[in-house]
Length: 267
Image (cartoon, rainbow, N blue to C red):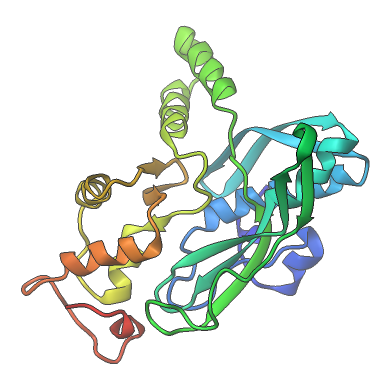
C-alpha cells in the first residue's frame, strides 16, 4: 500500500481507513512512516473485530514509498474485547512536536486472574503544550502495540542468512531485519534529529551524541528501520528538550526570535 495516501489530513483518508494523520504545524511529517504502518494495522484489527477476530502483527515494514505488513488472524471473543486498549489517539504539539498517546480503552487485572475492560480517561495533556505553549493537534486512531513479533523476525533473519543467494536483495533484507530486532518494541513513535534542531534553530547534533546523552541519562534508545535519522526512546519529552537545551550553546545557535521554537526555553 502506498504510504502517501495514509499520511495526509484530507477527508478522503478518513473515508478510506477511518483515520486522521498528524501533519500540521512545525513538525509536519515527523513520523509519517510509523503512522502509516499503525494506520493499516488499526484498520485490519477493526475489520477483524467485526467477525470476533483479532490480528497479531508478525512484521511491519515501511520501505521507499510503500508499507507492507504481515499479520496472523485469530478467533477469540474474549481477546477481541482487548482490542480497544490496543488503539490510541495521538496528541502532538504543533510547535515543538512533543507527542502523547491516549489509549481508547483500559485493561486492568481483576479477581480470579481475569481482565477488566473499561473506557480510558484523558486527555493526557493540557490545552497548551507544557514546553512551548502551542496548541495540540489530534490524530488517529492508530495501532499502539508492537509492530513486530521479534521471534518471527529472528527466524526470517536466520533463513535469509542461511541462504543469501535466494534473494537478489538479501543484504538489504538482512540490514532492515537487523535494525528491526534492535528497535524498542514498546515505543510507538519517534523523533527525528533534523526536526528537533529545526524547532530551536540550532545546528544538528550527531545521532551518536544524542543517543549517548539519552543512555547516560538512564533512558533506553534505539534507531528505526523507517527513518535513518530517527530516535526512538522511552524518555519523556521534557528530558529530550533538556538535552537539546544543553546542546544549544554559544557558537552553535542560529536563533530566530520570531519563530515558534523561540518559546521553548533555552538557557
